[in-house]
Length: 315
Image (tube, rainbow, N blue to C red):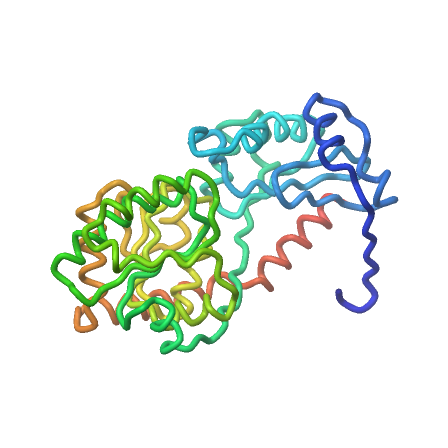
């Protein structure tokens, strides 16, 4: 923590208090654990009752748009969020897209929804050779993220399989921890003709993540819905051309720096992968240059300054 900043950590019976808040209780207030504070920032959907002004970060509204892609626990978020809004919370979102969705789905004055883009994490400088070693080959399509239905990986696997029939050196690497409903991804791999060139690495640590990005020919992100989208921006920062979907906030966040396709268009996804995996394709260098320019817009210093302005306005 910065000099002069005091931290306080207290045990809190999270399941118990969330059950009370879910039922509309205005107690226990968070100050029972923190003591007096000027502003409360609940950074992950669930906001506590408080005497102080409350900001609640809502990263996306998958629980409304695509409830079939959510766990039962996540499906409780709309009611918890509605309770927080009724208590006067201000909603912070990572994109204009999600801000518009909050205004659409919840009874909240428009000025109580504040979009502030996050910065993007620093990408560890990776070793291209180590990335190729982890992938099992020099040329590979990379997908990063939790293995869950929203990431639309079966569509990516099918698209890759079409390209792989005519590109015998290309591989597909899926890197990310298992979420839920991973059986569909396993089944899609099992159906692929090029299943022996699909590598599922599971969770990867930061250095391995950097290595994989350093060696990737293409980064693929055909998500069904996103409130922001860190992984494609990380790929851009690493100098990797990005193919992503038109879903959610991705057009806003990635702009013209990515090749955007409809999330269920297997043919278009396959064609984009084929083009960008070709080191001699004329669009490849331009895509890399536009990506490197795009990521310069997402700086944590700007995010922090905007959040501090928000806190001060509430105080």
